Image (tube, each protein chain N blue to C red):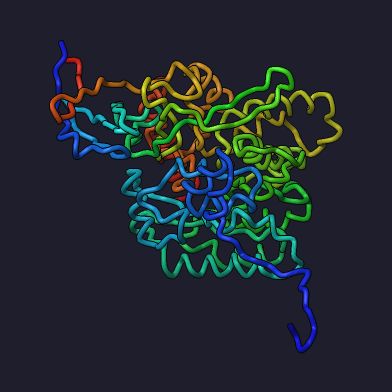
Length: 355
Length: 123
């Protein structure tokens, strides 16, 4: 009552506890939301394609992720758990960068702040802890400024371009100043996929993370590799070291073969190129994670051979994410020689990143 | 040749509890799930993760309607265990991976005798 008035509010909101509401759901949702923890509940509305941790099945020791932000001493703990001599830390928050469409300077602001923070608090080349420069490539000028300012720092070993959701694709000429600055500074670039936009991947409506992760984390890298090669980035910046991360390796020979077929039939659409696309790709590097080692070993052996051999691969853990790889994924491969394993586990990275 | 290895008093392993013990150089997880005992090796077939520290619950199954082919997911009545490292999930009774039948954890017979729980191991 307000005065003598009967009052009806036709739009108010009640923030319900999803765990409690789940008690009224039918299975399997009740179990998913009640036993999956806060992470699973946060994904119910937040992400229609589900929970990276499979509704509570996957858990992490040695890391506060995904429940809370990590502290810098967890880097040491992760290194000890995995048995690492050196680690290159990449911003987790950066992975969502392409989701930001706002026409403001937040990406530049984050990239600068992250770099300052890591240099101040986290990295220590003496202990083998390095990081990479987040490249806010939607702001080309800011990207070049960051490279110019930080590329010489011994703890900064590369720049990182997030491939998922990059528009226009990263071979576009608008990015040339970034590649020129990186090449001039001797700064390798890591092209790293991400989960940004997985829910609306190509055809909206996928219902399971197994679908969107299988496709999305691959599509991010695949689309940018095609763009880089067809637009002639390796030809225009021949001294730029390029590494792709977090899509495994089986996709690489597939795209090499497909691109070569297209190139031979449509060379006029890639006039900058002087060689088969696959020959440029064989000069790039590929992170191994998630290493697809569960199938027939001879297929894995052929795959490594097709993409250029052990010289092209770098071990990557992706720790502490859900599908991390331990170094055992490489040491357990029977057909690799000791020398090849050492190249993949460390030597290639030490050479490219100057560790 | 097999022998019984003592796990401990049954009273210390009530429903919902588990015990991980070392047996002849390897680790075995012994579980009491709603009064039924199970035992599997604590060595995930994927990357040797501590599978026996993982979540135990009745496995999720899918029913496909014969006529409409629509899928209904439901909680079944057979317990499974998921490796906490990467999610490899196994039938707790047979040890077989839920997705493929050529990947399996070793299983062990569990015996309760006069208030004490044992696992039987082959040697």
